[in-house]
Amino acid sequence: MPHNFTNQKRLRGGMGAMTMKNQQRIVTAVFLAVPLILLFMFTYFPFFKMIQFSFYDMKYIGKRTWVGLQNYKDIFSRDDCFDALKLSLYYMVGSVVQLSLALLFAALLTEKTKGSKFFRGALYFPCLIGGIAVGFIFKFFFTHGFILDTLLSFVGFDIDSLPYWLKDTKINNWMLVATSVWRYMGQNMVLFIGAMASVDTTQYEAAEIDGANRWQKFFYITLPSIKTIVILNLILAISGSLSAFEMPYVVTGGGFGTSTYFVLMNTLAHKNQKVGLACAMAVFLLTLILIVTGIQKYVEYRMSDDYSKKHQSKRGAKI
View 1 (cartoon, rainbow, N blue to C red):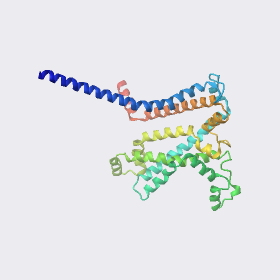
View 2 (cartoon, helix red, strand yellow):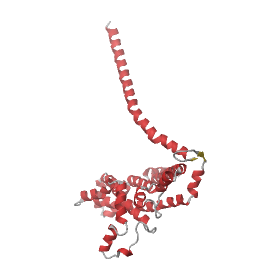
View 3 (cartoon, rainbow, N blue to C red):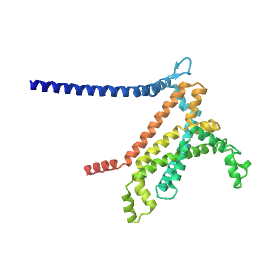
View 4 (cartoon, rainbow, N blue to C red):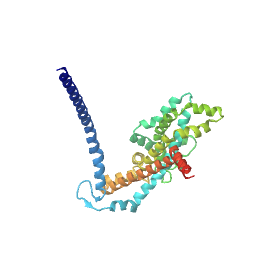
């Protein structure tokens, strides 16, 4: 009798454990189902529909005509698409300046100096302002006869002799690039500061004993230690260069030769109702960003210690 009672108790305990596991599985499935459904509805489904629409000549409302790869051919044959892609080079140059400044300020502000917290906040503050608001600020800042021209007149420049910062095609894109650098540099700086804070301080102490100066410690200790964050910021900066939108759209409306790829895509889709062509441009841009990211990741791998060790081991095996 006691033996049967023990068996029944074990059986009930096992059934209870199975019930708890089933309940956990059900609760997990329910909690995962809602975000997965939303992710599919608002991300993956529109993405696949965009790929589908890229093979059609269509408007938002009306008849759709299958054109195959014609929209993709138009990307390379239309002068406005090619010119918009070329403008990305301006922003890529700006991204290099942006990362260089972010590295410089991060290196300076990681030192224990007076006011470092204030300057960190001041340099990061532009990232907290919305892109549209930043665009309107600089739209009035660069307008001829307004803030920038007034400031330059205080130091002896004649306002009438100053160029139209937003209309002169020789300089207007550089003005927009400078605006983007001002806005996003603080974000890169904060990432660099966080990475520099995790570097082992004993390496700096050993370098000081060996007589290394600040620049030597930066190039031989700090920079190699944070190269992962440098590559990450570089990927984000290059991707942002290819998809620049807010500054040219708000400040100039894409006029005077400042229409970037995203601005042109917005114009074709919403004003010209060339939805199929705009979708093809979006797919091509995504492919281009993936290719650039892949190249950067490959370069990062080639520069890594794992690749060096693997390469050296292969050489040793051949010998």
